[in-house]
Image (cartoon, rainbow, N blue to C red):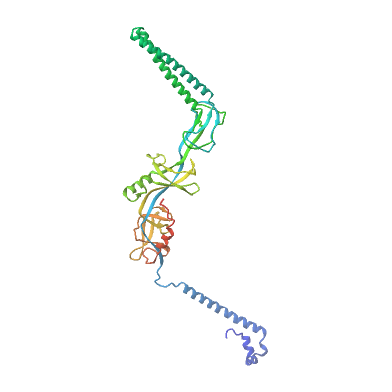
Length: 425
């Protein structure tokens, strides 16, 4: 009835028409319709407001006694290798700087730069003319002294026989025997001179003392070289195997030794730790090396100890001087406790904490001691034990003392991490 225009009602009522007659005009109808609309607007707004408040009330009303649902991981000790990633540089296994041992003019270079050479292979040829002449002269001198010795030997024998029958003076015989010994000494001197000349003649062929890869030459044919010069003609390096020199903090080494002594971790091998090499581009080198040497003193400036590993390098991929990272497998813990990093939070002091569902089914906060990261997990050394239920999902839903609805996610998390868990670093 409210929505029916008054003018329409008046028009349909004879009585009303009769009473009003010509007094009801068009302006009066318009005024009456506007009045009815002004009355409808407040009523409609009130109805809409009531409906909105009812909807909000239904949305904000939570069921009483609802329990939060969280996912937890059952802590299980596991076998975990202990490794340390250290920066290092590669060093040639053997290095030989090639220098001349005599002076002369380089006639030939007998190798290809960058190629592999063998021990004893000729690298340079020095002009041998003067050394060949010296050798020939020494050889002739030896022949001369040998001839003199032969004559003196026969003469000394005759003097000896004559001295027995007093045919010659004893003094003459003694002098002859002395001359024989001098001639014998002259022969030895000449023989040594010949040997020296032979050595110098051989030095005109400059040989490689080791097998390995040869670098570029610093001289060309026609260059004058001298004995024991400071500048090397070239360098030969043996790079299979190759050394990797790394440095480790003395603090870390001390911690490792204490853990080994206490039995907390075991050695990964009988004598030498294995070493995995990470190349400059981040890829893993295919060959595995072994730790051969550990420094005996600590660098006073850096507090570091030098470690040396020997790594096979059959394809020559590792070159001397290259920067690498060495992953040293130092030991093994058969009862390591690993928890996902997302389950561990830090307090204002930087301490590690985790929420655990205790035997009573309530949430309990534990303070943890974290040793190091293992992939996406933390290696926990204190604060958790086997069988603890660590909350890993829904941490924001609960607080200490709450009684949540726990869902075991151990199998799912273990399956995800099974194929990709690295060694601890």
